Image (tube, rainbow, N blue to C red; front, side, top):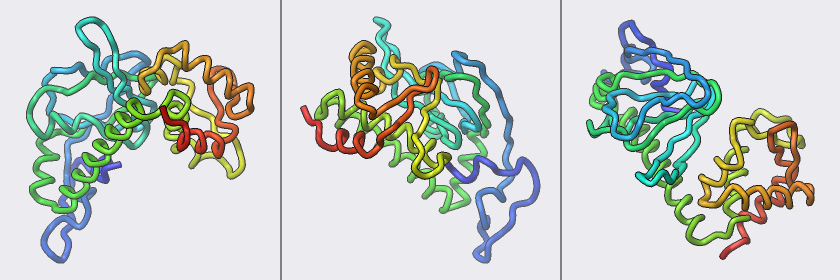
Length: 235
């Protein structure tokens, strides 16, 4: 998460010995908070945008929809992740749709404040570069998976990635429970597969004890086996 997500809305910035802000949190910023219900549209591709959003709670889906109605899910963002920075940087319209998955709460950062911060703070510029390069790596990994890996490997990689945040909140040795907001259709859209194929593969892994269920939520019972599948199953 970019550290300015929790910046104070008012107050004089603290200064480092070199004259620049000691921390990004010290730079005054205009912040607002918004809440969205499940399925609410946060913005649409092409909408004007001069603000950045940080997910405080819940999840946000970034997607593209073709004129024929075909949908591509670019990613699902959770608490602490930032989005909307592209249009805030280049001044053009939003590059994708953003939709709430379940109830979510966002912090909105004014784009003018961010650009002022980037001018003032080399640290802020480096953090923004890190964010953008991380997104680029994630996109490259997603393209690699669709092109080079079969469905089990793509699905295993996705489940492990989705489980990373939850694993940090789970006691050692316990199974990791994924959020209920992710449907099998969502999983399929993220890896370029149909819902029916995802359903069949999940059913096989449940039978083998790799996955489990708690209500509507998937549980990663054996992450080591998922990791083996993610690394070895090529087309």
